[in-house]
Length: 69
Image (tube, rainbow, N blue to C red):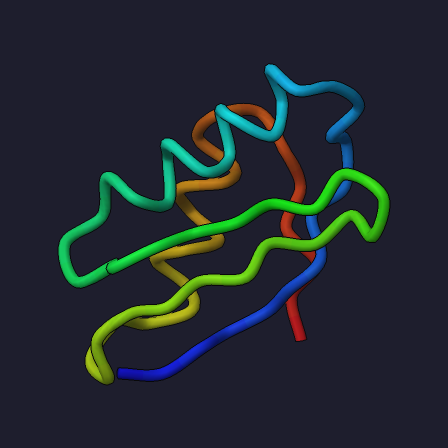
């Protein structure tokens, strides 16, 4: 397992946080996801083979902007 943290722009409320977390945890290989409204980040614990691009795509699909590295 690996842990990845990246920025997420556009989150403003608990609904936003839940949408981001739901989109990320729906991905195969993701064990957990926690969005932080104050820090504007998401932290994901996932299998080694999960690509960051897949995480970013999931965040974009629910209307938020991932901060790519």
